[in-house]
Amino acid sequence: MAERQRRYSYREVILGEVQNVISAMRLNTRWSSRQLRRSGQSESPLMKNLKLLRTQLESPAITDLSKLDGAQVMLPFLEVIRSKETSGPITGVALEAVHKFVQYGIIEAFPTYDHVICSIVEAVTSCRFEATDPDLDAVVLMMIVKVLQECLLSKPGEDLTDELVHELVQTAFTMAIQLSLSVLLRKTAEMSLVQIIQCIFSRYCKEPLSPGYY
Image 1 (cartoon, one colour):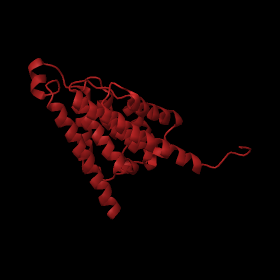
Image 2 (cartoon, rainbow, N blue to C red):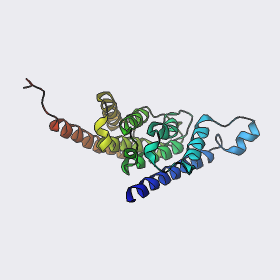
Image 3 (cartoon, rainbow, N blue to C red):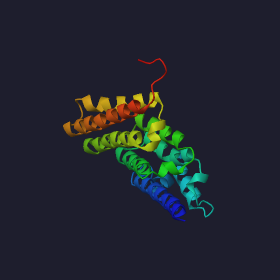
Image 4 (spheres, rainbow, N blue to C red):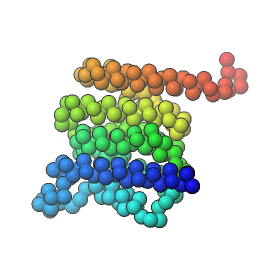
């Protein structure tokens, strides 16, 4: 019973984050319903997919996340993160949502969480957004590092491919040495990079050595 209630609350968390991203997008004139009506443009695929996910999760038939495709649930958030059309604040809200899903262990409720964690890291390492305010953009970059760190340190992070771990390390390392970024951001990336490297080596040391390895 407790397990069922926990999975139900996970659904509520995801629904809340869907609404947060939709609200952040509507604050931008590009995505507002009023602006779309005035210009006669159709609703963007990003917004449509978020609304479709909300409708799906609100269905009474959905009582257990294990019955859903985790990669498809995460997809609307990851599309926002990868999109060059979204502003920093919108991308930041989507990153915060994904960070929460990993930190709370929500993605572990999906049967194919190994694919989910890989899709998250792949999207975050290729994050693109429209630059607006330097301070707000710095917050988004900081969230990128934090999400990647959380992904690696989580239990599903053990299933990341070597290629994705390399991309993850490269992203954190690039921010740590990029002089155009603020000292605070570079230092944050450096501290995250230390924890990332420590995690990688701690897992490597636990792996059994292959026969004949010296």
